[in-house]
Image 1 (cartoon, helix red, strand yellow):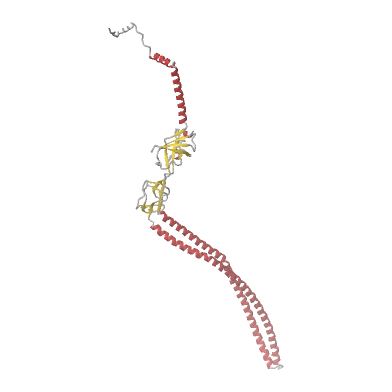
Image 2 (cartoon, helix red, strand yellow):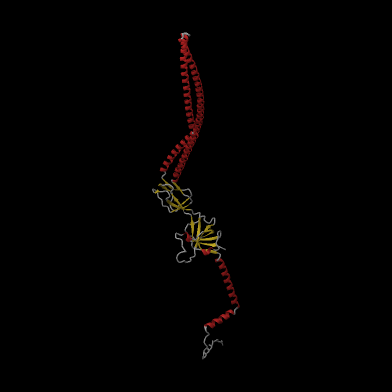
Length: 423
């Protein structure tokens, strides 16, 4: 016979008449904790976890304390304004907004006709001034030679006049001596005539002898008159010679003004030369004005904010566009003053740009000389009113490392989140 395994159901225990209540939750938790702490593996796990947390906390503290960052930062760059240096009518516009141009590229052309005419006029005036300066320069040595000749001639005239006076005086003295001699001879002749008169009356001499005495007396008287006339003429010659001396002295004084005339001639030559230089400067300015009719790019960069159009009349100093050089950019980060305790120039920085999500390498170049509030239109006046301390922000300039800006897409004004590694 085959044995048949038959499962016999065990009878359920009977519930006690008075069941014990379950332990409270706190006690159950305590028992479970006691069992867990009593397990050696659990102790090692707890210790390892605490150690890992401590190490992670240490590394986190060191990491987050090794840099300073801010979200108040943006890319900065030079904005070169292009303006007109001469006024005129715009005839040609060679660029558009956002166009990349090289330094020296002709951007705008102004009608050069008026400036070309002004240039030709200045050339003519400069040539005339040069001719006048050349003529004035030649007059200086001529005036110098003439002045020297006049002085020498006047001095010779004075010497001749003095010699003439001396000769006239000698002639006057000789004439006076001749007059005195004639007077003495006349006295003798008149006395002889008186004696011959007495003798002729007594018939003691001949009539011929008496007539000879009368003739001698008349001749002697005439000789006296002639001698006095010669003396008067000699005296007049003295006065004439003195007049010539006065004239010669006047000529000498006039000739002695020759050096002053030479100085005047030199001054005129210098004035003419200065006038020529002035005309040359005006000619140079006219040439520059003609060149300024072609407005060129001062730097290499991107054209932005163009406001000029063909046919527009522009004035001197009028802004026509801006050029942004993209190869000379930096980051201006406004750090809180409490973040600058360990920050200094030369520290490396990571620059994360929001526009493209890329991170660029850089370094701290310098820290601004004052807070941003000091550069505002209305700086704070903490000495008045109720004072509330506000943490100030200081601009920090961060330069890109060499090579970071090759083929970049950065533009001034883009937001940046820099990290400056202070440790």
